[in-house]
Every structure is written in structure tokens, then in C-alpha cells.
Length: 182
Image (cartoon, rainbow, N blue to C red):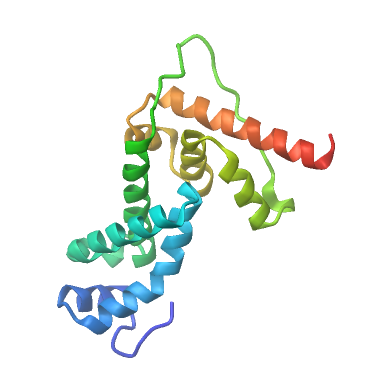
């Protein structure tokens, strides 16, 4: 993080924002807007929706900046959490979630090694996933949320969450196999 003499720590920057210091607010916004844009865009692949998400995210950030505690984590992580929660709230309203698990079977995890592919290719693959699968894939594989957390965020059954993730991985694996000619 590029620090200004006046705001050498995340806590100092947050405290400047609490005091409604416009310079602090400007620095915070400019420092994190691109990161949050990329985070939100990865979920919805729509520039207009992403810009709306950013507006709401930073409104929430500035409204609740008093709650930020540097001892609990970085300012970037705190803002990212707000961005992800805002994104999932907006996308949940659009999605039609269905229960996918009938209690009679287990979903086996599958590993996909993305190290071999460039970021642009991976984003194009993710963009082709159905809305629900993309959302859960992002939360689990990229953001590191547990199935229980995702289920709570999305208002679905934990096992349905696992099914959505499994289906997303199968579709990604199929696309990769087609690319490799397997």
C-alpha cells in the first residue's frame, strides 16, 4: 500500500475517513477502487452492474468506516468483504435458487489446476458458467469461503452449495478438456 505521510497505516487512513477528511476518502477510494472493480466484475461480467456495486460498496465503506479495526485485518480485506457481500446481495436478487440435494448422495470434490492458463482465459471460462455456479465458484475457490458460509450468504442448503460447485467444476473441466483435445 502506497502510504501518504499523514496516513501511514490502514488505521490512520480509516480514522481520517471517520473525520470526513476528503483527502483520506480520496486516497482510500483511489487505492481500492480497481481491486474492488475486478472483484465484483469477476462475479457478474457486466460493467454497469459492477459500477453499481462499487457505488454501493464505497457508500457502505464510508458509512461504516468507524467499525474498521486494524487489529482484525487489513483495510483491503475489510473493504473486499463489504464488496463481496454487496455483490452477492445484488446477484441473489436476480438468481432463482433451487434445492439441488435430496439427501441421497455425496458430491465428490474435483481439482482443477488453473496454473497452466492465463487469467484472461480463466475469466472467459468463468463468464460462461451459469450465474449460480459462477457465484459459488468465486466465493469458494477464489475468495476462500467455506461451504457453510456460502450457504448462509446465499440462503441455500450447504449440500446444494456443494452441488453448484461440483457442477461448475465439471463444466470448467469439460471446457479445458475440449481446449486440450482430450
